[in-house]
Image (tube, rainbow, N blue to C red; front, top):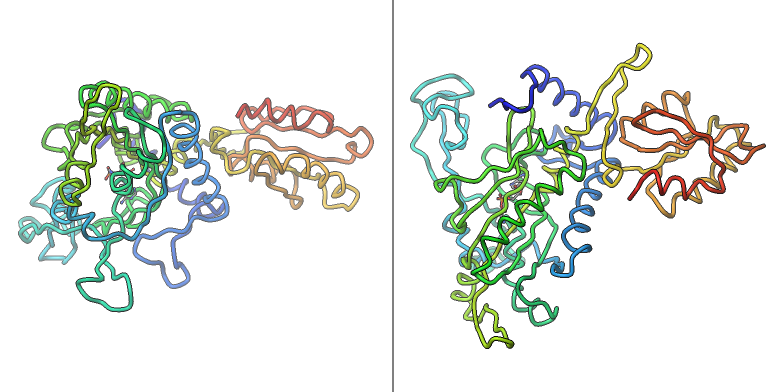
Length: 447
Ligand code: GAP
């Protein structure tokens, strides 16, 4: 599928994806997991730079969704959970994808993702698919040494249920009342039939979800509010509006729990695809867990004497998938003095390193003052320190890591106690005294 608003040819889009994959491997963002054994089924490891970028995406979400609000609190629930939870939530019965096998080439596909449900995209054969079978995406395991029905457990396929099962605990301990939210970031697991497109769809991934409990009469208004807030989160962190859209689900697309859902979609190289879903889940989950557990999962408003079961508005984003979108969107190449410069124009809040300290040479005279500078900057921001290679090549490396500011220490620094600050985006260089350096970097980063 190609997008009307993002004018890129298919070739260009594929070349960009290739270049980002290459950069990601070369600079230590993401590695294939267990690569020394030939890899393991679309699982990935986040390298020294990727772990910083992913952490910054999660921190930016937490800051916006928890820290800067008085009406949302956090939670970190268990990954392993009882089948009771998934029976009540509907996942055991409904969390399935339709699976078909091609009788000709033996490949497996998700029926609902095929362009033509009669043609195998692998071998091109027509009419060779088996009848669709519903395949449950949850990973089952056993908690304890004995493998029996009574020890069955599941790895959570979403973080959301931890928020519903803890609704009463949070209500009773946090002094919050609707409208209020519970937010969580953490790993989820789905036995996807067709993982792919790098970290876009994997079997192990991270989610950033928030369940916002509201009086039922206010649910529509809060749904629209969260659609707008969540769209804005991506643009404020640097993704241009032309690469984003908010798409409301048709009624036949809605999940089993949803009254309304809109997706924030990003213009991926293969077309528009989902970053996040914002759903009005009604009282589906609290009702389901109240019925199954026998607990009263509703809210008693002492002021009005009214008892009601809140509706839930849920913005549910993927951290790993979102990280990939930020990488793709920030990736630029340009001609600089006859050479191609690759630069990640990441928002400073997301940049893995905010500052790189670069002594002009490895000579011991410089390392003393360079370490002094590092000692000033490091307590405030994540910094890189690099003293090998020509300075131009080191700037290019930092451009590829998305480092907004480089601080170069040279031999004049020994005399004038000043350093050069170089800007990633403009490549402008300014000489500034060490004394005012931290204040200047603070202002330039604008965090
Ligand atoms: N609690 C609702 C829920 O989980 P979802 O649309 O299934 O909704 C939310 O998942 C987000 O999690 C998606 O928008 C996507 O960003 C991310 N996500 C889901 N499955 C994923 C997968 N297999 N790999 C990477 N990210 C995934």
